Length: 147
Image (tube, rainbow, N blue to C red; front, side, top):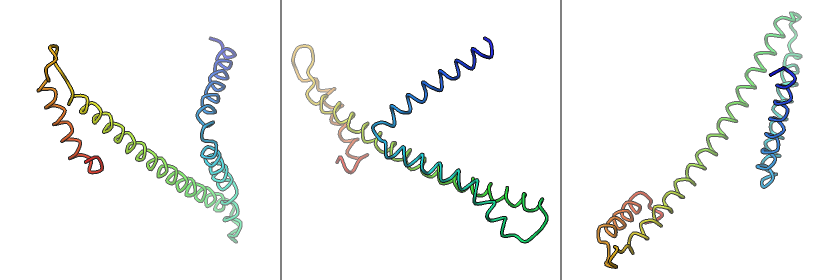
């Protein structure tokens, strides 16, 4: 594959990724606009705040000013990165809670179905019904809300 073909493939992949992101962002435009806005604020802060902080230093040594500016920029980047990680952890935790609730609902539905189980001859399937009772008991001990 030549370089031009690889560039064309890369552009097609980027276009497809942008379309997928747009599809995901369409139902929640305010959330994605907020993320983009915060990203722009962080980027502008990384560009303009460190030079402003260094400009107040009266030292005439340009090397020291550049070092200080880079240290300030690194500190800001770490702060923004920590905030982003914190937000990511929060949403991961929320998604995990929702997933657990979905699992409990699914287990509850299966257990209730087991309570009405019958065998091939139309008689109650005692073993399966007992399994449903034990499953409901376990759900009640694991989830106080569903008790």
